Length: 103
Image (cartoon, rainbow, N blue to C red):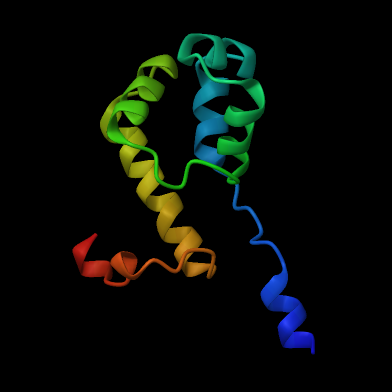
């Protein structure tokens, strides 16, 4: 019974702390980021909170890097670290993320 209850629990979020730090370093509020990217505030907040955006495309990452006054390479490297941490915590189960040497 307890295993069944655990299986039905929602996946817990894992914060994208790197996005929060980059946004603060750039001196931007969520409002400024979302207005520039034409996103809703709740959606972007969910990206930072680790609830959404687990498969962000390169165009969005590029735009986000530009808005956060960071470079694309840094943003991609930080997102890769984030995704590896999610996998290590058991929050990501995609087969394509199984082999460390391929990343």
